[in-house]
Amino acid sequence: MARKIGFIVGSLRKDSYNKKIAKKFATLLPDGFEAVFLEIGELPLYNEDLDVEGKIPDAWTKFREAAKTMDGVFFFTPEYNRSLPAAIKNALDVGSRPYGESVWAKKPGLVVSASVGPIAGFGANHHLRQSLVFLDVLVLQQPEAYIGSVQNTLNEQGEFLEDTVEFFQKIVDEYIIFFNKLTD
Ligand code: FNR
Image (cartoon, rainbow, N blue to C red; front, side, top):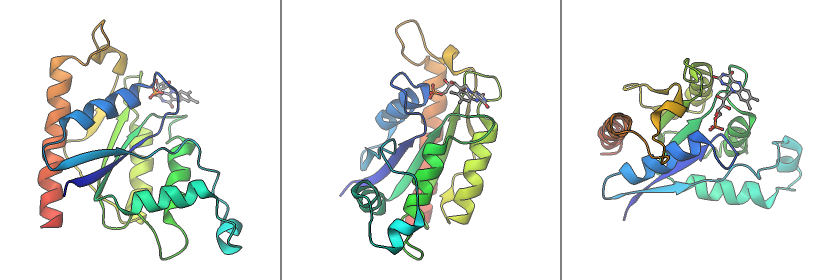
């Protein structure tokens, strides 16, 4: 059975560069691995009362059930005001509760950040990693996946340039080696 990698995209806009990158990464996974896009845009903001009182929104339940079955997880994040977007943080929070039932622990993870600016979402990338440390997601360290000036990585037809795809493939290849080491 194929290993399932949950793909979480932090930008909700339709023409998102991060979404484009995620879609490209999905095509670069080897045989035996499958990308499953986990939608986070409709998740109500986390409120612990709803868990405690058993008024759990359906969207939380669906997300938790889907995320739980993933063998690994990839995050594609823009940077919002030098940090990660609230949508990703909310998804992390929803998936981390109820206490003791986190969907995240021990999953091999990958963080990719992309920005139209030259700093490549460094702040978002590292703030996201900080939460993933606490959530016990085992994140690939190298190669670091910073995509700066992302608008320049596509040609006029909207396809990623060859050297960019090679870089993406290198990241995926290293992730698979990492994944196999952790899960053997
Ligand atoms: C941004 N952007 C941005 N870029 C950056 O490099 N550092 C930052 O701190 C911010 N802050 C920021 C805040 C908000 C609210 C928005 C909407 C945007 C610009 C951002 O990199 C750009 O919009 C990207 O195109 C967002 O990624 P997607 O939506 O294309 O995936």
